[in-house]
Length: 417
Image 1 (cartoon, rainbow, N blue to C red):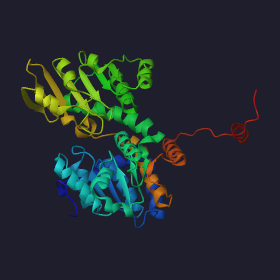
Image 2 (cartoon, helix red, strand yellow):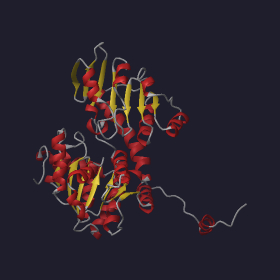
Image 3 (cartoon, rainbow, N blue to C red):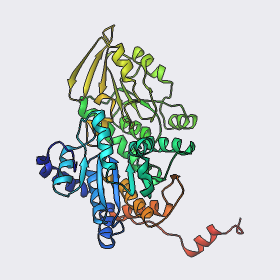
Image 4 (tube, rainbow, N blue to C red):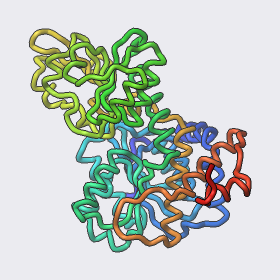
């Protein structure tokens, strides 16, 4: 099949939304203009398993201008913006397999459909594309040059694959570029997670006890934004250094078992499984709200919650009420999927500008023949710094540069006191 989307007639709305996002993506615009002139990706086939949003659409247009043929599928069943999927197919001629709310079977059918295009480069957000290739489609590996990975969860999966000696081609961990995790993970996830929960529930944050599970870059961002709205933020962690950092940042830190008794809102951002589990549900107060902003819906043990509940009903589009035997109610948001993409619109375009600029430049880097053995690689520092430089320039900000004397001093060891 050429494409599988919800409704082609949504295209006109999608075009306008894509154009609106483009206003906030000046770095990607500059790369797109250069790609249009140089065609560095001419003849390349790309398969991308990403959130089908306005920001991703602007990345797709960069690849198209660069001469690549691109097939896209969703990296989350609830993250697709159907009007954007329609615009990508009807207006811009892309092959898209993505429908908001698709079931698990359709989700993997779409991944395999994107792989039917025989990619030279893979772009992933969570490593489901790479995982499918390694489990079921290894015949594709001989033509694959390399890939990129956008998320923390995906990088964890890929490093596990590499440590077992099973990763079959090189992948650049875009997630770990400074211009990605400092901004996308912290400011993007922070703002969009709060936005998603607010849209789903219309709660007042001020005065609420908000339990942030995980204090990585995403957790930092959510904690910061929740505190800014007047919430009393509690952090839970398994890493002593991150826990110490949270303490130094002014947050109370405690085990989830303790936080479960006092929290009003729980947000998981760890990349791990069963972060909120049966024992935590049993301890939660009546009316507790639980949401996930980690990549997969496994961070909340939903089967355990289903088993515990005597009744379930949907109160709002993204709010399911679970009533426990003692009549306490727990509210699960967006079926445990990414709340910022399910109930809101994902990260603001301004931060995705940097993340996707890294994606575009890393794909170009691999295509230009930087051959490497299978493994997970960092974004080259010159690419990371160039993205930062372009972003500053787009904001009208200039910074200092080293003088020749200063550079010489930093490069030497002789000079001392």
